Image (cartoon, rainbow, N blue to C red; front, side, top):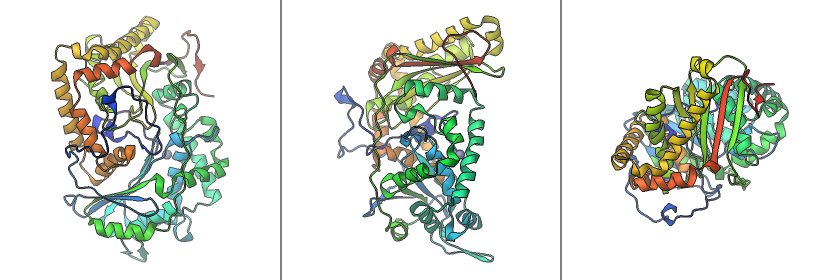
Length: 497
Ligand SMILES: [Zn+2]
């Protein structure tokens, strides 16, 4: 599954964000106030669960978060700190997502689909997703199934920890199985790009990031997806680089005892050898506004996206704190921009973030709007231009956020909402494992959530101004539009073949 942020609430938006300090180059910081707090700085505890951490000699980190209120349940998650951002080779995009599929085809016990059969017999719920910066595996089952053996009529199933260790440390997939699965990804590609917004992101990305893997979407370029069955060697190179103890963690959340988990994980993963991960180049600095247009084949509501190049996320900094509240400031029901477009002028019918603005390397804040087809047919380009101008003005107006009459009060309400939404989203072992993992990966510290929340708490209206002045400028702007392709427009590209 390819994960995009469309339709997320703020808590999951936070959760879906990424940064891992060991592979990311730090963003150049101009203001001392934006530096991360030192490693020893104490921040108030916000994350409501105890976090137990152990590092194995091979570099593998194991995190155990006991949540006894979810009686007998456990999520045994493996966040891999690599996604499509780690696909640096031209012509070989989409491998992170491809490998997410491959991991379910592991020949456990030398049998085709052996792993999947054991999981099915166990009765575990098993799924995974891939995004730009991360791949996340999150099987959930009963605590008693972790260690095994699990007795089933006519079969003995190993424990979940043994099964997961087997596919992560020594994946076995035959070339034929690989080719069939790689061929099937094209179907997923077609499904994804039946959504107009996804096509706009796909076309905009290489324009904004010509020399960085953010220039392609998570599933990869269409040509590469078509050629995937032939990418056997490149795919294994990707697996060998990133499916290793340094590039992932084990995050266990549920009704468990930390010592039991540590002992079993050590037993199953101790012989796994680390390798050095390749470095990823930083995206080039913005060099002016980027504009693109998609001619869609079918009659659809037109869309306008407006965005800005934003910094790499570093939880604990002011910049990242502002990034986490942008959704509230810009597109929540009470945001002035949302109010204006959706209710006062009624020029858009839908508004959201097109991608997650919290990323390992500098990426994009991108607001996606859906317009009205009948109004477009009546007023054409004038209508599009009007929405585009309103979006630009609404976003760039944050440069003067502190001058709004209720700025301090607005910010107080947002902070409290972010805190409540975050706590409210921790309502299953799977959710807790996911939210913890996606934030942990930024700097691989167990107090990342606490530091991020402390930074949000310390924000002033002037911090919002400062962020907007730095990042919401014409030089960093991107614009994408889409409508059915018979309206004249210069610099357009045909969608599809
Ligand atoms: Zn998929």
